[in-house]
Length: 118
Image (cartoon, rainbow, N blue to C red):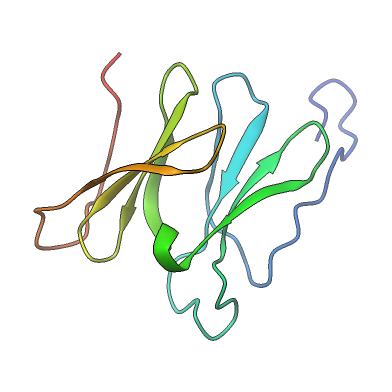
């Protein structure tokens, strides 16, 4: 939506209902995710990174990328993204390539919150 006019700029289409979203600091990308039973609805992954300029899906996360559960955050500089998986791991991706650059394991349950330090 345009904050100036109230006009819808893009419609981001998901196979199933998408829950909270995270905008990059420069508002050029938006990450949408859906938690819960996803495999039956979108086996390739339900989590998506979109271009806000074009409305194009830049990357779909799933399989080896991991289906992200809440929470999800962009780094303050917008270069990285972090998200928690249901198995208690954190994954950090490069925001430009959507390549997973780190997997952090050690939690025994799902992570409830993540935040970058400024």
